[in-house]
Image (cartoon, rainbow, N blue to C red; front, side):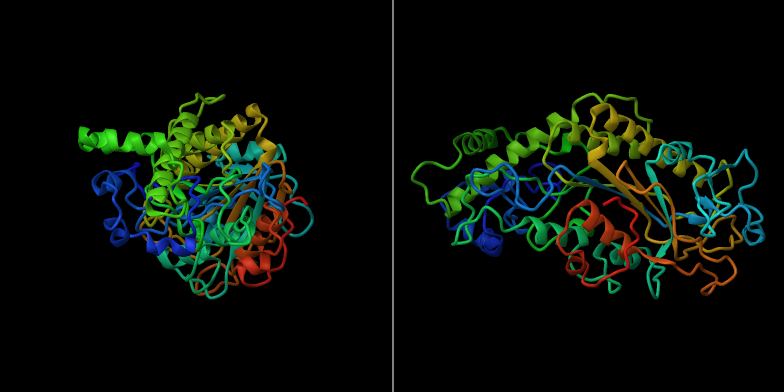
Length: 461
């Protein structure tokens, strides 16, 4: 394949018209005079998966009008359904201990009690002892905890619920909510009356996901995300296939669009695509190769955040990053303070703490907000296997100096349940609305989310 996993292969500066993407397919290129062998290795998915247009600044400007390019959102997905009740513990409620006799957390050696809870009935909350890193961020005013987040008629399927969270639609169908944001807020600038990109202006990068595939949340109708597991995979690999592919590729990458070539021709498209792919790969691999300013924990999740911090430090014009920490489907052997769930929470907590320490050392912490969610919580009562089954509402964490630190919302009742599950208090799209409007500067979050949702005001204006 070409540049790594070219689910990861979308480049950063393509200028083709997305409405014509379907025209640049295998059939069209067979009619061009270009070498298809080298083209297939250089740009496999560009030609068959809607080589996308990126937003550009107006001619002569370095930024896009109305878009705050200085602000960055990092989305952290806790995959598998994190047990919110053993993450944020209502330790003063007897119902919690009755429902979880084997896995409930007790005492100061297992709990990190939270301050700044206010007088809204949210007293008596603590974090899991493994979350000392998040507790430190909380105490420093860098963590907002939103309680009881969910949606109407909850779905307990991992796949369907994740689709719902990622589309911001309870049908789970459509483009991703962040993809729609980028489409709505960033596209269409820097184009003349013809709608064609003038090619003279600077661009911002598409969203970047660390992983084998890009999440649905980042998929828009016009802008497509980049996804890669490691920077080593994000490169042109034609030379690994056969030496004969090197020279044709290098010629394409070095010459750019030949003067006199029709800028809208297949030849020009392939030349731009090849050059842009090379530039994108070089930029990202160079950024990620930099040593971090702090020591990160030795976990896969921490390494994802380290890569993101390195890209931010290097000045990439990416505004949205996506990382995933999986394994939270704890149906058995969940344990209390030292079980599998505790290990996962510690990896999450230590990772985000190192991430913000790194950002602070870079003097970039004020630019970066992190939003952490899971597709659902777990049931209130433990099961017979010492674990918890799929549930509904769960807490979210928002991190950074721009959040209103402390607890937002009331903890759901442990006795007034929905078929054994918590009843949600805050629609997750209310949090999205705040992130879009108050942080990312969306002009109309309601249009992006296709509905209006009560503001949580968890992000400072």
